[in-house]
Image (cartoon, rainbow, N blue to C red; front, side):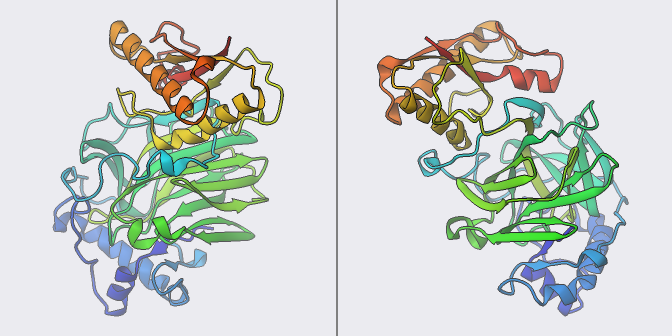
Length: 415
């Protein structure tokens, strides 16, 4: 079921009988070489077992490893150490611009089940909202942004701590940002489990392709040239997945890259896994799971009092709209075009973190930024007003992370 991808440089090491992987530039060197010997040995063993499959790989660059040859052992020796936070690469945001997302149609679920951007965690510690099942993992900063590093294990397995163990519904979405250093780890996989706790499927995005794998189904599609292979490396990328009654759509940055019409899986929970080591960690952040998705309003007469959205995202403590927000913004624009008499108050809301005056100011700035963006997309300014309410109108409990995530929202209230 699990088909991790092996980089060409790692294959070369295996063919030459090398006992370790080539060193790469920061942020890959997460700890001293001595601390990674055990993890490197595990990686070599896994690569040797997958060599026959790898020789039949894609363009001699990204190789699949046989499901039957997967090792279930993990390396737990030694303590994880903080990585160097000054590694090469782009800044903390995905590299694409809002303009490049103009045709994006991913709309996240309207009820957040789990969200973690790791901002409250300490470097060198395991994050408080996650469970470690195998291997080793640690929080570390990359160019000023807190990230989750999977540093040891074949496979390393982590999953969100959610009170309800069966939290996935017939409609849900998954989002995260991933960073792939050159000559990095095998890659991040999202796995799914059914009500009996069985692994039923995975999806994975590598620098070459997106892949979905289940017991009787394996589908993959190459990434567009703009973000493929060397254009994928050393940059942040936003990955999004929508599950709708067994149909799966996978997006990377502004592109929809893979559609699975019938996945044949009915998952109830998910997690993250992959093969990384301390020199070649798996790095991700901004992980979110939400129920619902793809609001089915387009082309219909709009009669609701308001639309509550969680898909318009901003840089932390700023009013800068993130590019992946364009799926929701495109939906709002289309609704307003389909209903030319419709007018909206654009209302910004925050959680209760920080002072009330600051939250009110931030929510006002964000609502004005959304209004300005909609105007730039062709909506008449007279049909929009902007209001910020700070943390004064919560719709969920501010005592839990998911409650605070649901309170951070933009509402479009019918005038």
